[in-house]
Image (cartoon, rainbow, N blue to C red; front, side):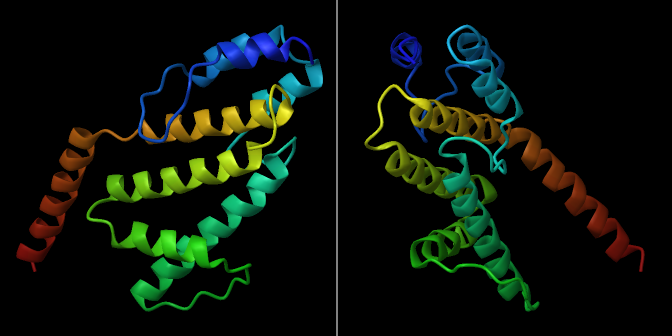
Length: 173
């Protein structure tokens, strides 16, 4: 664990509204010689829906509930029933409502990302230079990578293409 001091101190700071300072492959490369083989394997297999590893099990419960809350509120908005049972949390319900009411999908993603970062910060709060910090960082990096996949111009072009297809179908009726 002594090698974590250098590793964690050398990682660039991640913020919900910031840039992606390194990709996950570069992060794994930095970890390779500084963590145990078992920890490295967990980091290598890590996804946003993983449930195995330090901090990850707590994250998994939070993330699963947040996704179910989003699905519940989307279902309500569409007038469809949602029968899955989950642990409803007022904070998650409020954030999900804000995300659904956002002016566009990118704004909604930013609302969710900010909430997820704050939750991860609360999990890591009293830890320094240990697996909790490392896995919290890894999850934040995964979240930022996902966020940076969104490209405004491509999304706008795809929306326009789909809208034109719908218009053509309507006019052909």
